[in-house]
Image (cartoon, rainbow, N blue to C red; front, top):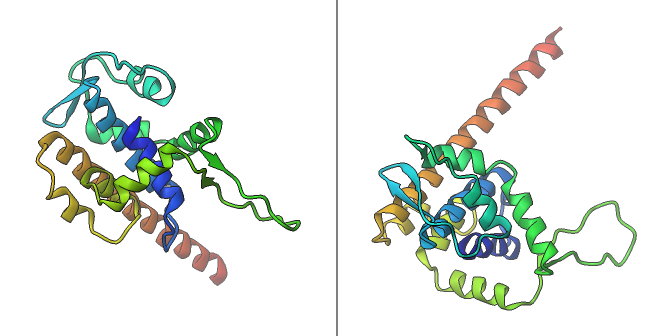
Length: 202
């Protein structure tokens, strides 16, 4: 899965402040997978519905999992529903896949530490390809990365550079889902703070 793999490598390779959250990255990866399936003609979009197409030639690994998880009954699944369902824990799955292929390493600590060092991409053709796409600000990869909180250019500006309406739909839906996740997280923080204040007053 070219775009999804490149996005995961960029996420590991690009320092971000604050650090990229797993939830936002997982939603962006689900969008990247959908775009990869579109490129493989395994799906097409009917407005906002994900319509299954031909089985992908690369039917193994995460590409195979993504293709096999498509909803094949009408009225089919919306792009938004795909992102939330497929995105659950997807960042961890992509990291594990990169590690299993030797494309990610974990630095060896020079002294005993209870802190786990973050994984980093190993030097490889896959890392070089992702770096080239990132350096050129290729709109699809850059738009997904921006939605996940990687980079500085707003996702909306990058979407405007694209001519493919179906890709634009996916990127716009990823951006909306990330904003919704942020709103849910903020609301939960406010509720938790209010709950803590009640207990302090008791």
